[in-house]
Image 1: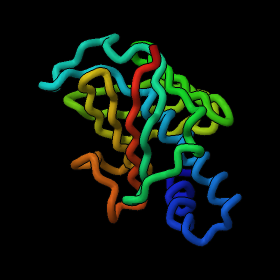
Image 2: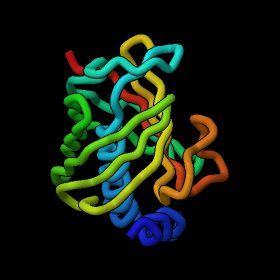
Image 3: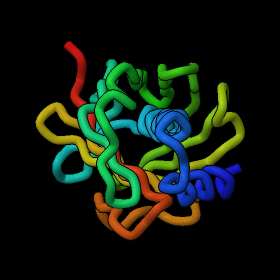
Image 4: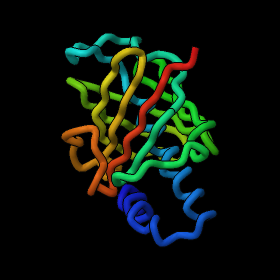
Amino acid sequence: MRINLVCCALQFTNLSHNSKTKHMRFIMFIFLLSLGLSSAGTKNGVTQPGKLNGTWAPYRQEMGGKSLPKKVFERERLIINDSTYTVIAESVDKGIVKFSNGRMDIYGTEGVNKGKHFTAIYKYENDELKICYNLIGNGYPDAFETTGKPAFFLSAFKREK
């Protein structure tokens, strides 16, 4: 299924506007799900359980070096509660996350990503959360950069008050 997601991402540029919107929403949902699995960290990478608990709203997303339009993700939410996450988008996705030294392993337990594993890096600073996912899950991104990497997805969140 991870390969299918990457294939969808690679074929994205050949789709009609309506199909692009559906694919972008699906891809964003998967990424937000992955984001929800993230736990906590500080500037120096020391984990603080519960620091990321709450509801997060994406304000910027990109894939393969291209920014996604806000209308694609503006209603999506990521809810983190310790090592569990819920992503609310067109459907609901839930799972668990394991994190270590700025890296995340995301495991879907309910919804469209049930049984899937994604890898990511994350950074938490100034009450903002940035996550860069490898949708194939065959390694962790080296940086918060997606240019030239069609299977990488970057999402930046602000905590809802």
